[in-house]
Length: 381
Image: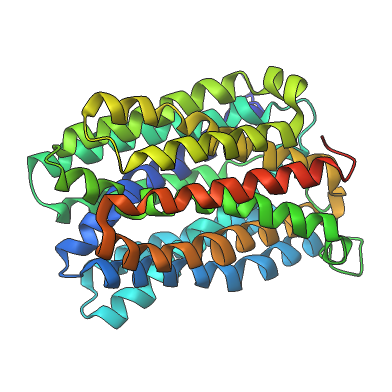
């Protein structure tokens, strides 16, 4: 019998699952691994920020190259191979400067994969982005729980081998990504970026979506350390991270219905409103039940904001500029937004501890105001 290729949705789901297997191990517990290498809060923030800013510089040229060549899958395979090699090299790295540089290379290659994967998924006819993307969230839960168990059983040094193994799976998943929309932009002489660079509404959207995501940076960088300071075990912390992603999964599963009711900008507005509540209360509660309640809001602060942003891009950006717009948005979001906030997060957390979280509510409020302004601008409501 002839072998039948897996459907595009299943192969793209495998990509997101592998990508978030890496992220699910790394995001909650990478600061703990860095602390195990002798780094303090400010040094951890510098390492994380350097990785973010390196991605800012690399992502837009990669998106332009993908639109010009139309070979998005080939670029993804190359990036996955670089990320795997760099993570493996971290095992032998000594010294703060070398650790910072190699980590930045690994994180940049890994982060640049996601906007290219989003471009392929959003370009596929009949594909439900939310239901494909949720496999990444499921994988994140598994990784968070495994990471918590590993740290609970021993040393934080064990996190790096898990990241390396997950990166190897990610490389295999990139090789299986379907070649949807390949060469679509190859006949254009000018890079697709020119189609969005002069669009003022795109820049307002990028700024708005960026601050909504940047509001999570104190949580991403220091949430685990904060919960540890309150006496919670790593297993409980892993469960709290997983709970937030379960809520996110439920939102993605119902993404099509929510989109039909609220539209992309309505989803982003929900994220901003929920962020004001979540971050405003994060440093005030101390009980496990209180944190469990706040983690449910992750469905809106991240899930609704992200889904709204992706679908806004899909509705407003021409296909020939899709990868350029995705990578440019990712660079703005992770660099000018999250990168600056992460840099400040180390100082904020070092000085204020958990009472620094309400500062993030101000970013959510700014994002909410931005969505309201975008709604007055016309399309993609």
